Image (tube, one colour):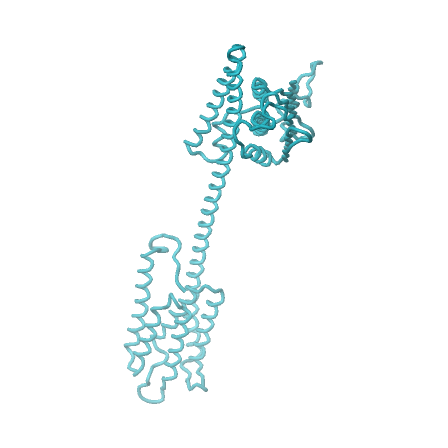
Length: 433
């Protein structure tokens, strides 16, 4: 067993190289004290027994239980060699160098890793003191004291045991505090990594939504402008204006996202401060751009004003935007798209269908898709606690359905036509055909 230093407080709980040097110095000091105490006795074997006990104490930190067993065995030999009947005994017992037993017990109590070892060590010393005081006739050990002497030995042993046990408890507490601090640090690092991963996923979704939709619209508008440039300059000019407006919006969004990446602010809160707030009103904007790109869009938004949070409006807008992008990429101009956004019983329902009858039906789409758009839509809906479905329709075309719970805000009191307040009346819904 080895002693572990935990709290790096100098002169209180030393750690590192300083702790090892100080611990070794204490071991040597205890061994020298036992050796000096044994040197004062005139028995033939006192110095040898004391030297062996001192040598064993040098290993008390690594093998405390073994050291205590060795020291008590040497003390037993000491008492067996003690013969007070005549002359100088081979070894005096009890003797001052028996302090090695207390040092060994202290080491077991302080450095033990099992809960029962401190109590076993204390009990062994108390029994040994009682045996030494009362004698063990069948081993030839004569009594060395009376009841008062036994109480003195027990009091000394209990004092040393309680001191060592207090140090042992303090060490365990320091280790538990250090382990708790390391665990909290690992948890904090894990939370930071998870927050960074969520932020990267959110930024990736934003990049995909901005780049994919904007480029799809710009490519189709550029193709259309090139086709009608000579015979219909007005249509070509309108297409070029749409390209410019789409590009400017995309550049603004890219600047905001890149600023988040450059400043290195993790978490959705920091990112949301720099991102443009998107509302359901902007669904009409992307629908108009899709119409100018050649799609036939039938849009219906039936949601009370102020009923959705900014995050919910952003999710609904991005889903519709991605559906229009996929229609432009895979069906092309000439396809018909039906968009229904409504709220029913505290649930936001989004239904987007296309007929797959565009100019690209059955041919290669504009660019290559690996399904990132569907993955992003599903992630957005699941983060909001909703359900998402996407797949081909019977016959031709594609259908996307999403439902999300709405965190309904407190209705704002409005004035009715009669001039009275009605707290349950919301602002008119927005509907476009």
